[in-house]
Length: 201
Image (cartoon, rainbow, N blue to C red; front, side, top):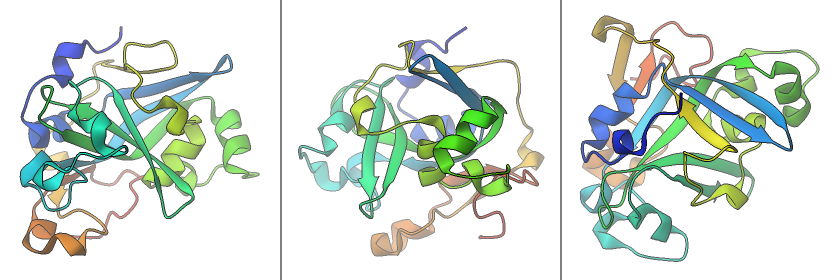
């Protein structure tokens, strides 16, 4: 069963980023289903977060998706090559989002290999946000898409992790955010091989 929109409409983006660990993320692209459970996330806390695209209320063609009500996809291009999938959360006008940094693949592995141009499955197949997007076939054409769609959705299949199993550490690649770069807004499942930077603290 798809996770209801009300789950995403809560305004504690940091708590939601942690709660997303263990939730299953699926895509159905051209009839091909791929997916897995989320093992790494990063929270971006809206207009007060120097690391967020929406910091200071910045409203652009790219960021306008973040200002919508929670429960839709925010997909943007990074470094000209990586399609980065985020989940918009909170209420309309409060531009918060959660970056999905890694999933543990469970279905459609052969199709993920084809998309990633890999011959054999390695841990980096869905490790890192660019890899997640490519493996699942997520690109900017899905920007703004409802997570209630039959193309991109999340399910709660009963998998959860205890506090002892989860690390809360600073985010990756946001040094420009100065003191906000030190906030423990990145969450990952300890010991999972698909986590992108398990040793970074």
